[in-house]
Image (cartoon, rainbow, N blue to C red; front, top):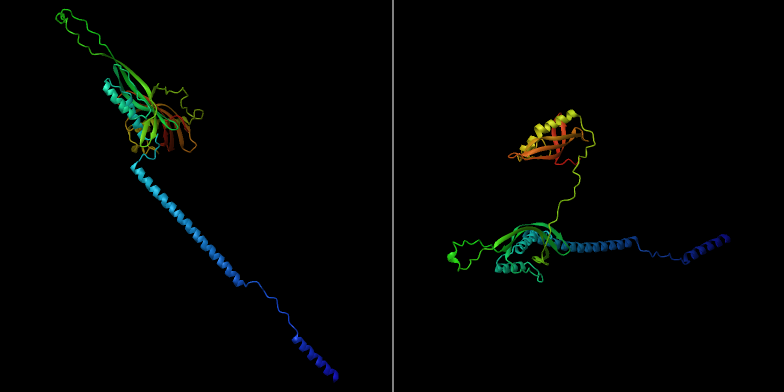
Length: 360
């Protein structure tokens, strides 16, 4: 009994001490809750979006201003082009340069026989010259220089100027003394004491042709002659002899003679007579790209023809030499053709026509 009581006391004591013993506090979790982390992320994303919007707006505004500026420039350029249609052209390729050159030629080449007129001419020429470029000085010669004709021969473009080369034809007229006629003594007996009447001077004309070279510089609102013009010989434009255009099919096999004869007959009796006499619109049913002489010349015949097979089925290539003449006069000429023909049951159609023996 005593032992049972002692065991109960011990059990009660252990339970009391167990309830009163100091419990250790749990370690606090210092990490932020997941919700707070999400808020920070959302704030960052929002501010990033706001920054992008601001940057995009600024860039868009800058581009809009740039586009507006370019639009105004384009409108101004269009207006300038309408008011000055030649503004886009180079100063040294503008028709205005040729007009200036023409004025210089007409002021430079002809020289009057009258001294006062020469003075006026040099004053007019000086208007086209730069300040330090001297105008020509004429001696006290008896005669004149007449301008017969001129045309622009060439333009030599250099770094800061152009040299206009004009083919000019002119006549030098020298004035010589007119020989006195033989006197008739019987008729002039009563006039022995009279003064001899002055006889008109004889004109000695010499025709010449040359290149007149005019150094010109483009300046504001026009052009100016920056060095004295000078003459030079007209160059020979004929080049060295070279081989004529050749038939590139000359070494290739010709088509069957029967087919060739049919093509030649069609060209002789149908195509070329119509080509010579009809208009382009009337040739549409015979040609892919219509051509016609419209009665300018008359077809005489085919001088030679060679027909070759094409790489395309039912097509042939004809190398033709044909002769034509003027309708009013017996002036004849020969012309070369390359004709690509399409055959449809011996009905031919011209796919292509060129005025040469060359080419494929």
